[in-house]
Image (cartoon, rainbow, N blue to C red; front, side, top):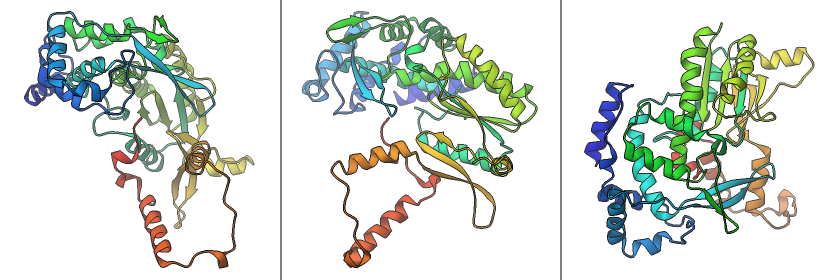
Length: 389
């Protein structure tokens, strides 16, 4: 399988416009078994109630039976199980949990599709990609602000992105690279499966079902064409100054040298997104002056310099000890308070004077070690530090 994936990667890299008509044969029993082993063992079960442990008891036979159904065209995607998680603003985010066998087939298919589309995705994209993540995106934001002529930032947020993707347009974009009918039919089955909520089957006309194993890849493909490629090839050549994009899934920041460029892009973006069924969040999408001269300009106007919230962190314009411009990053207040509540759900501790504090060297050294750990520069963080999204 790895040899086939490597060859697929080479072909996709050789010709960015090459179309692939025969890749379904790469979904072998071995590929399905590897996908099964790559699933989270404690993940929630789908509508059929089958868990990882239950499936593992006779994994070889189950995988072979699944492969035969795929081979004979008898495989059917099961409806998704709808659950809700609370968002920071108090609202609830719907998640769609697929059945275990659907997860397996989706993961094996995503492995193949990733080999193709990774050759197309631009460097500005960081979400749900191999070897990339939140920390790399934050590092890039800081690098662009500190080392490039950045004066204005357009912070983008798409309303209900995963639920708003137009399926027909998504399939048309996928077909730019993948023309294998078997693979395309699988994708259509997954995005049209519907959800079970309170015992009822609900079917929608749009969306990919946030929570499915294949959804992050499909969402990246959609925004690659809708935003990334469009901004790089059509927008940037028409601007007066420099511009940069950093995107993590459906959260993106566009950095501009001049305000006039930022305003022009902000005016045309809603039209561009509406063409593909997407809407920018009216409150979370905003244009702010942020960069090397933002602090001085704000002082002249008698205002506080703007801060920027990106991927759970607040960015603040600041000066280093040597007086050079830099950006300080801290956890957003909402997330910080939420973390405190998780760590200490009971009442707050009583404050004591320093005379009452324990005088144990090991306590002090332990605290120092912790501070040294969390004070590491962003580029030294590991992918596992982010946590699972």
